[in-house]
Amino acid sequence: MSTLSIVTIPDKVLRQKSQPVTRFDAELQRLIDGMVETLREANGVGLAAPQVGESRQLAVIWTLPDVDDEGNEIEDTRELHVIVNPEIFWRSKEMVKGIEGCLSIPGYLGEVERHESIRVRGQDRHGRKVRLRLYDWTARIFQHEIDHLNGELYIDKLTAPENIWTEEEFEKRQEAARQAKDKNAPPAHDPVVGD
Ligand SMILES: [Zn+2]
Image 1 (cartoon, protein in one colour):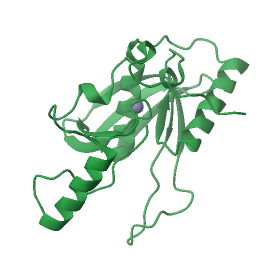
Image 2 (cartoon, helix red, strand yellow):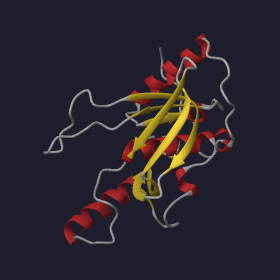
Image 3 (tube, helix red, strand yellow):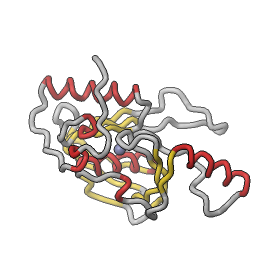
Image 4 (cartoon, helix red, strand yellow):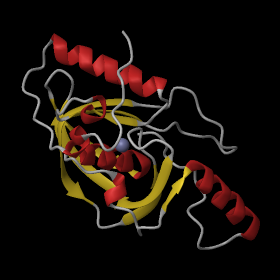
């Protein structure tokens, strides 16, 4: 199994509404396996089919690991989701701001407001119905990936047009914020890069 090439902006496939998946055949399984491998190789947290040039309602999500009190990653706490034909059928009123990146927009990070929790229905890789309740960063990643399936990108939803930075600028900003304890700086948590 080899990795797939990732499509970047301004490729048109990223702006199309994806087609529903109707055949859960061997070809689909190969595509999913390729997407999972590509996501792991890129060390990302999510990858939607349009990002590998396939306009289909499919995304793979690899959740962030749990961390201990010292901030160290706890092994085997990342969870892999394969979601097909997903639909968000409930959204919390509570909104949270966070920093996102995208494998299709390399080198940039931006601040986006998302629903703190959502409920999603869809199918798994074999076409079985699934329902998920998602919170915090996992809910954020799902919202980002489902946007991809609708031809939407995080840069369409920035909290303000200027709230996008190169990774280098963001790093400097974080450093400056640490030193100045500037209340207006972006959130101190690590960004979700590369999804
Ligand atoms: Zn993305």
